[in-house]
Image 1 (cartoon, rainbow, N blue to C red):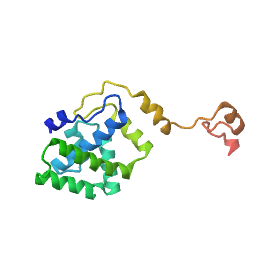
Image 2: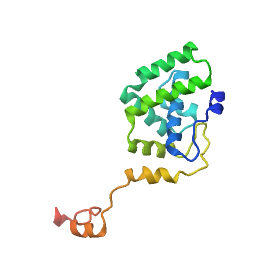
Image 3: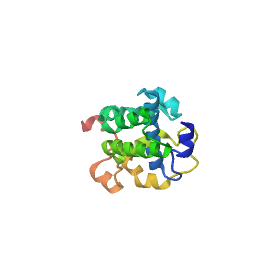
Image 4: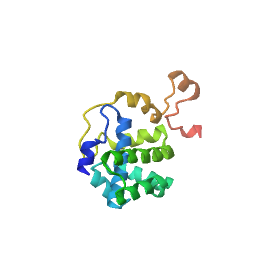
Length: 167
């Protein structure tokens, strides 16, 4: 596994979305190699935050990805030795991840995953970049809508609790 991770680093510098995608892929690869779906075990093996791995595993369970044709096919090819080299393993893994991503893709989900990953790369190292474009592109999806001052005067302040006389 160490040779695979050195050959195909599971991150793309300056691209949090791609790095989060690659981190999910490694969680699934460890799950296949060690025959476990346990988030705590997988988080320890990948040295990724437990909450991140827990959500990835939860989505895999919720969508039936653990038993999907794509993941089962990857597992069978890994175990049978049908993949001739690390490049073939990586290509198959990427194809498998595309299948997972098609089932779970929502911009909000990517934001949640990225925040739970908390800048931690596979192996436990902290990323040494900030992807400002990620928050600009996706981060707004989780921010609450704060009314403009004119709106809050017109409709009342939505952030204040109503007084007993307003009930």
